[in-house]
Image (cartoon, rainbow, N blue to C red; front, side):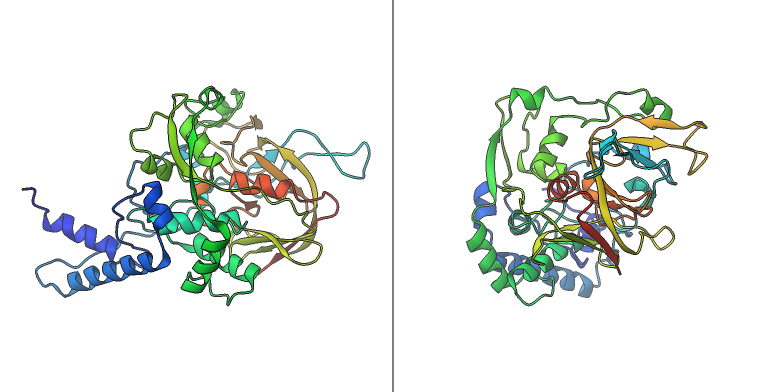
Length: 413
């Protein structure tokens, strides 16, 4: 019989005693996720709190210690695709291909030589302390995202981004707004949105994608590359279905993501919104972007990475200026920071794993934009140097709804 050491036991109990902790689910099968209910989740929370309370009162166990802020245990090794940007403690530039400005023949726009953004890693502050994905939380995150109240990445954990999504859905449906799941909200959401999961057969096109085995830390070496793409099919598929890559792997243990014909379990994100956006409100305090139509109704709401106190996002009102898909990234050490030995300006190639992800929405205030990211799991848990950072899929969806020269962007908070 395997004996669990006191140290190991106290570590487990420490995780259980954290505010975001939940009991590990028995199964992450499609059946378990589709059958999961709010009452199930409440019961697991109650059980976890009881275990933690019992541990605290047991004199034979050492005092449980919480993990330091920002340290996140995972059920599988996390995919570290953005570590190369960790040293970039400064200001960079997104420089997309030349884009025509609506209503101004002959006029084009590029993102400026000085941008106010930095990679996710440079601003990482706090991340939710997690134990294991919960089937109910997977389900509610999928269903919320399908209503265009985005939780960011679907990961099966309860944190601030899920609260933001719940709050947005409550606002959309005229429910009491508190950002906390309850029985009434769950009843409406489950009836409206149906099943959360689907099976997907990996295609030959998926396998043959434009993947990049490694992205070097050095910007000079990056500038010599042609494409900052996904590392493999698993990373691409996770973003395709709005999921955290760790959850994708947990749902499909042993799956060969590099083999066409492999059937996997994934989220069903539903259809993208189609209503045109007249006004965008970026709440700097809440870390949230909400888009409204011409009648003042909410079209979508996304968690967002916003500027810090030291390097804030702008205030006031501006407009969407232009759009650029797959923007390049300009680095100028004379204006912002120096990375490694790179003392001259560089242009980094485009790609979803570039510093501004797969989409740049240029704003009329110079040097500011709304854009994607190479690290979707860190949205809302880091600080930018002023720009508004969304997941790639949220940025792409928003870009299809805004109207350059017309859509107003208001920064509040």
